[in-house]
Length: 304
Image (cartoon, rainbow, N blue to C red; front, side):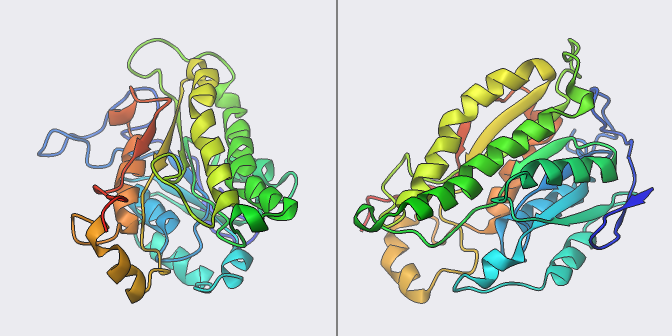
């Protein structure tokens, strides 16, 4: 047993009923494994606010039996209008979802800093024993702006967090020794899963968000290429656009102005995204790779 150097949360290498290799666990009343991620360890980045998508993903993966490595970078949230959450409270919330021997490890890091994406993966893998899945949820929100006001510094900052970090996290994840040999044939061929997050820049304009849209477009655009490079190692790679999700920044004025665009009568919620993303980590999704999936609840940009 080892512990994370920052907060000392213990971690063990787990083996469970749904461990990689195609061995399935108990089947629930609906014919599905009730703990499809038991025995696996999932690294989720950008887990710093209880109202955020990263927290929802971590909690749902824990509900499915996984051990969680939660990356966070509080200084980013401090700089945003919505402010920062209490990281200890965020971790306590995730911990309350853990099942059985599953463990929580938290790793703070500025993923824009050189070498940090690799360090986060290496530290997490060393502490947990190995990583089975990676969800790149981190994102830089602002500063941003329209084309007329764009600067090299803002473009570079978004690229570093929203695109470069995800690519380097995937690189480090795939470099784990468990993926060194080609995956064997058969139902247990998939040995790992990566999910990136993008936005809706391919479905409609994002006014005033040139840098964010460019970086997120890069992730969507490179998904198929990374999937092709990692499929022989038994790693699936997909990208999810969660659509407009209320993570604490939506005002009443925003709701009134966009009400007609949401045919289901509400904005997306963090768990809407988490349900899809976490499912992509399970064996039920082992045949899906190289896809960019839009999950927007029928969001109709053209309605006014």
